[in-house]
Image (cartoon, rainbow, N blue to C red):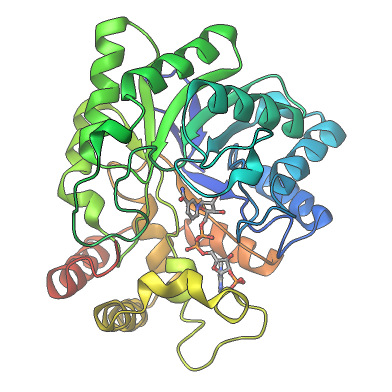
Length: 348
Ligand SMILES: NC(=O)c1ccc[n+]([C@@H]2O[C@H](COP(=O)([O-])OP(=O)(O)OC[C@H]3O[C@@H](n4cnc5c(N)ncnc54)[C@H](OP(=O)(O)O)[C@@H]3O)[C@@H](O)[C@H]2O)c1
């Protein structure tokens, strides 16, 4: 396992991060614990959670994932060995995450304060290493958007106010570093500028969708990552399972597509499906498994800090960690580049 700096925080994270969003829904507490034990035995020191997990978001299950991590910390006593990331939701209808009768979840001072406090309690810890805004508070088009439509700037919480709230938590010691997720260049640069002006906490990372078929990060955020030391934490590096080849001929029972078909919608355009087929075939031509090609691609980007993998079985988890053991070669880069030149980034 190689370790990379998390921005300029001084923290060092494994270049593979353990995703957690299936724990408490597809996976039990015992399975979550088994995954964490195994990941640690493979030198993974970085876990990614969120207040809204598990998925799909549901009032009945919300918070279970963090509780599972919390009970593991309590049982294993390994809190200080782990760099723990979690997230506060952005603007949404998931009002069950809040005690008060709110119309929407927002990244107001009161709601962030409540979210931090509840995450700390569920996680059975007194600090979060990386606290991320899961998606923006402003009315930016959401997950998987293709066309930009402007939003009402009178109806957004100023980034300065959000930054100020997060800064207070860093000062209190509840949070060690801050990150963004599902973000665009404008907010990333604003967060960097606010830290430069104030001397406050510097943005450490951006967690966006990224894979062989979802490469929009390359177009402008990548350069920001390199110049400003704000690395990418790619999520869904396997295109939610598609890039493993598991859906080539059938939909396996209890797979994500079987259980939650709507999740995979962003991959199901004609361009997306053609690009996925090209990735599977290129992997085999290179003598790789599709999973190796996809996972090593995401981890090998110069702007990647740590690639967030997800698994619902131990077999998958082992295969996915092992997939990073190969060397990324010029031929592999050429194959990935050819796919990108042909299909661009069909997934956003
Ligand atoms: N910030 C965000 O908005 C955001 C969004 C999504 C994810 N994330 C983070 O990123 C993590 C990973 O995301 P993801 O789960 O979408 O990643 P992914 O690697 O693209 O997909 C993982 C899923 O694919 C299937 N799978 C994994 N390994 C496999 C293998 N070797 N062979 C066949 N199938 C395999 C499993 O689902 P089945 O077994 O159910 O088919 C697994 O849950 C999450 O846990 C979360 O921490 C963040």
